[in-house]
Length: 102
Image (cartoon, rainbow, N blue to C red; front, side, top):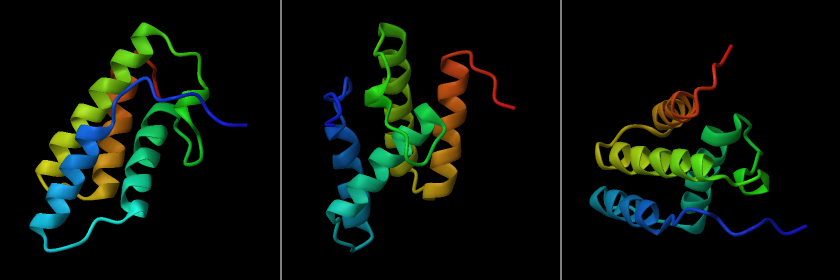
């Protein structure tokens, strides 16, 4: 089953990742972009293999996902390591949607 299209444009995040890796003298491969999408999926679903595009997309959810993507872009530009970005984005999503994590 193919998932629905993303309610959020991820091209700016992909561009930030490419620019960041280029600044480090590294190529950006498809797997790097996939990892960033997985980070966003984790931030939204709390699962490594979850896919937010399978959720009922509401205006509130779309807004929260956009905030997470913007946060990730800013953290990429600040050279924050992936695990720290992943945690920060998850925390932001939980705060943005008023979900409490236990």
